[in-house]
Image (cartoon, rainbow, N blue to C red; front, side, top):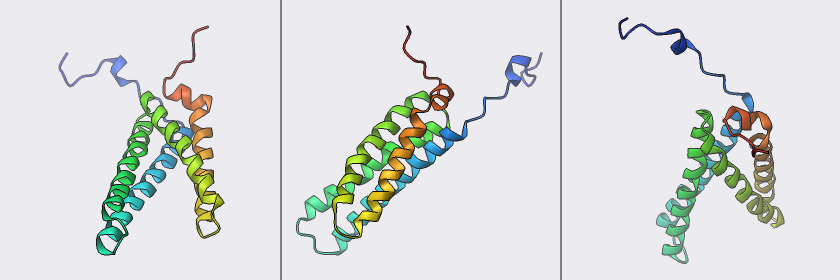
Length: 144
């Protein structure tokens, strides 16, 4: 048999990715893009404006960009149905909840951002903790 021929075992199509996993990846990806965009905005405004503390502004921007990489990698892993990606995605959603609460306590235009962030975090948690997502990612429960 030549190397270009496939055995019947090789022709098994991969299991389709459930819509819940795709939606969870989309939520994580949107949060990643928001963090990265916020970091870039903070860096640009600190370099073009007159911040009170340039070092603090640059550090804040770099931190937001670095934090944006975590949900971005998690979203990529979720799209590839990698079991490791669920942990960072859940942690990202849990970290978003206190930020959303803080935004909701403001008496400004930050309130709609807090509502959107809280909705995204709760939606992401529901999608990530659903049994269909756990099964699609190949995560087994505790042995009884």
